[in-house]
Length: 181
Image (cartoon, rainbow, N blue to C red; front, side, top):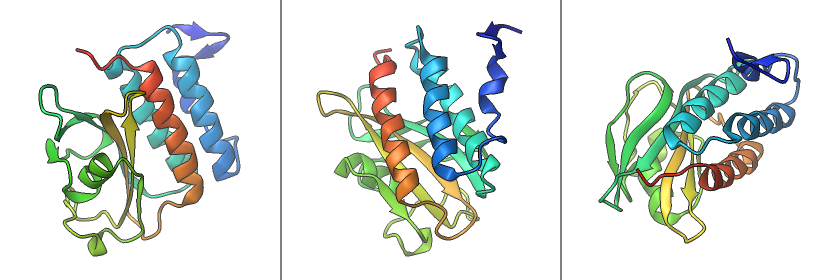
């Protein structure tokens, strides 16, 4: 296994020693920065990011049942295509403006949904999901590159702290990933 400055790659998913939600999410950001250094392939970076997200929230005992990405479909600027993720199989395409992911993409605004059953036009890829956060990934030219999507088995799974750090992650992803396939 390749070591990075005395660490194995898998060690980046060890969030157990960190106590607070803010500290765990800050560590997630630092880990993402380290993992994407000298790497701009979006599949590679988002695969590691989905794992970091999964393990970070599991360490916080947040019942996340899906963490991953939808990417703006090449040649179709109004549709999201399933990207790297952790969790059960998921919807493959989502039109902009439909569901939580499509709403985040069309409005360019983070959607923090405490009860997905009350969200108009919610797309239930997994009927067990009760809350969700979706953060748009926007290029420096204002184009939606994709979204970060996290689902939770509990109501009110996400809040302002999550929004703050996931928006920071989205900005980093926009800067560190080459989406031109």
